[in-house]
Image (cartoon, rainbow, N blue to C red; front, side):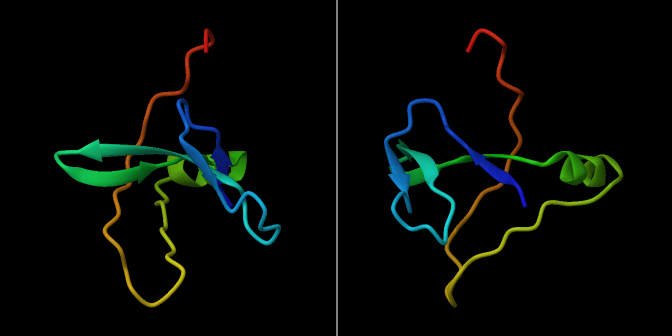
Length: 81
C-alpha cells in the first residue's frame, strides 16, 4: 500500500488521532476558484516495480458517493529539501 508523505507547506493533518487510518498531511489550496486538498504518496519498492512493468495506480474511495478527484505524478524531491 502506498505510503502517505508529508507534503510541503501542509495546512492540516487528517486522521491524526484515528489509529485505524494513516495520518494524512494535506495542503489546502484554491485553484480557479475551487477549493482543493492535495496530498503526496510514495509507492513502495514492490509497487514501483509493478508500475515500471506497466501496472497502474488504483484509487479507492471510502463510502458510496464518488467525489471529484485528480491523480498526477510529481518529480522526486531534490536533496536540498
